Image (cartoon, rainbow, N blue to C red; front, side, top):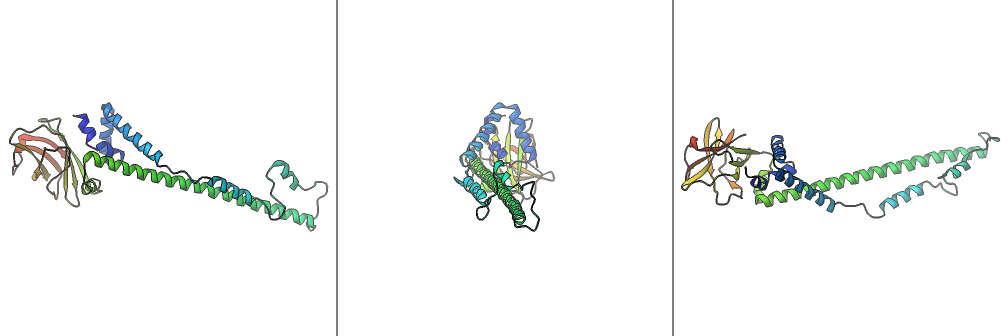
Length: 282
């Protein structure tokens, strides 16, 4: 397998954006374990995403924390000249004299009970202010995290687009939730062959990306087949003049697998089985 072709295929970017199936993710992780260049490319993609997220992180407005704390401090003051004690020395001023406890009906007792009630209410108010402020901070952090992931995803989609040279319609088809990605792997006649087919089960459109195919002999051409209940269906001829681009093939209604054969130039009505080079199950 040509590792550089594998890296350039765009599968690593799709892995990073979470667009691969579980089996496809496992294959990328296996390749990263076997081949250090693949692991290095994955790390480079991760570093780009991290840098992009940090670059676009938005800090809360300057002075916001001080304004909220000042508001909490202001709420702790009681109307008039009476305030809730904020230090230990000031708290002692609220303690009633031990040796002369006033009766419940005396003015001083009523004042003390009102002061205690006011203190409790203001402490509850201060606690609620802190609670709502902390919740606001968490909500703001979650928003910034979601925004960073959105920017990260957009960046990765752009990188995939640049590598695969996709049009907007092709990118939409490849990332569509009804599109199945089929990896056609080389058979004994051509073990290094590798082709990726994208088949949309809703629109029936088929796209093909060549990862690795030997240069065909003169007057020979590769042909794509869809297999429906064991019956081969012509899906079009491959153009290797520009193998870096995604190719549009014939629409396919139903298929259980795709295969590549080497046929006479222009194609064949039935596949030449002894020239079967690559195949992939859906």
